[in-house]
Length: 515
Image (cartoon, rainbow, N blue to C red):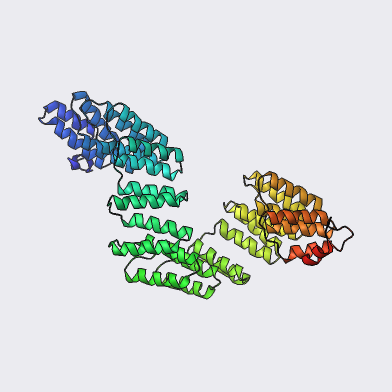
């Protein structure tokens, strides 16, 4: 049958095979048609499979539901989700096909993966209302996972209520999805509660659940709890995987414990667990953040010896580490080396080039990279714009800074505290303190709170003009907000007291304390 349908030497169109069946009135026509339907489905000959289904319906036969499932699965694998849904509805409408829950779950999964979660939920509700098929925990998990992925609190709540009403016994997958959900919302109590419930129900906790718990605790900096869970895995003979080690390595790197990261890396290799780029990049980033560039470069060499080519993230991490140490020439060499090796730069790479040239005072080159960035299809982000705005302000090109801010807004990016602080600083540098105060008011009207740099710029600007009362008012406001002034603030305030105008009501001893 497979040769008749697929082999170029023997292949016959389905219409010809169907005509042959009609002409000779074969016994077991229904079985032959079912076989023909499966062969067409397996070979992704979808129109032919539907033609067989049409023929069977006309003759009053029924294609087996399991054979229909083969076509649904093939359609889903090919991304033909709409055809998959349409054929499922034909199965439902066809007399004699008893729909299994596996078919419903498959279609729902296809819709969810295509982002049509509401349509998937409506289909499940329809099947339940019409008593066609009853969902199982696998069906519910599919929808629950989709709602979690969309961060849809309402949808998650609705599925959980349905599961409670049916009632459905939670599977390991259900608990794993819920741990992911509550972890993403930062609900530590609920995560631990779910984990404890799994223990109480004596559900076998797998490596994926443990890894999720460990990863979540590492992100929160709860390394003691993360390692306790890691030890528990060993006690329960649950073998850790690359994700488990990756989470722990990420956690200790974040805490600056690079020695612990090296131990975990060695342990991982001794157990034969495959390393990956994420782990290498995480450790390289950890070394860079501690200023240990030699170690970071050593690890890059090891990574490449093991067959991993440095990617755009590796190069960006290394260049950023060098920039923090003011090793700008080496940072540029690193980024240029990336381009020479055929690694495409991204928005972070371009922004870093722009930042380096800004630090070096080479504004023309920074602007050239900004233009090249857009030509190559990389969209500047808020950091890119803020970098340019900051350098324009420092070079007293405040008008150009405001034009850049307007361009940024036109492209759908909203100014943040760094944008406003740069502009405030720029206006103060050129002596337009009143303009700086207007920008400060605009910033606050947008619900953006100033930081230490914002207040420092304004206090310095006001102090230089002898506007001590206003400067001290901002100082008081700063203290109430819990912001800690630095030496520049105190120097500016002390300087303002030598001007003709002094802070209202300031006593001599207060003046001495401030000094």
